Image (cartoon, rainbow, N blue to C red; front, top):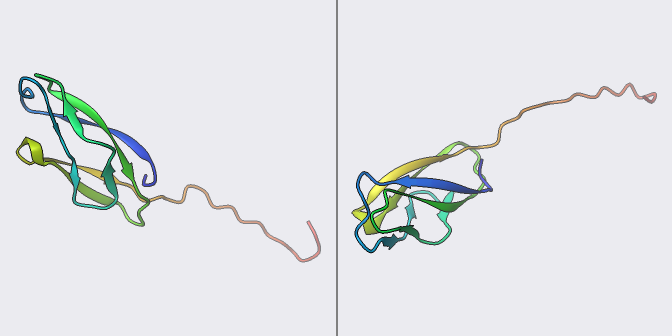
Length: 96
C-alpha cells in the first residue's frame, strides 16, 4: 500500500560484471521512487533496494528500469487502501 518504504528484490538473468555495477532506478510513476542507487556486487545475480511509495487512490502499476544495465525492466504495483470494516452506531436521540 502506498505511503510506505518497501524493500524489493531485483534479479538479473546473468551475473553482474566483474567489479560489480551501480545504477539508478527509474520509475514510470511518481508513486515509486528509489532510495539510492541499485548496486550489484561482482558476479551477483540478485540485490535488494528500498523504494518509497506514495499513497494512491487506485492501484497503480509502476514500470521500473535500470538504465545502467541495458534498460532492464520490471514492474511493481502500489495498492490503494481498501475499506476493511464499517461500523454503524444508531442514536435514538434520547441517550445511549
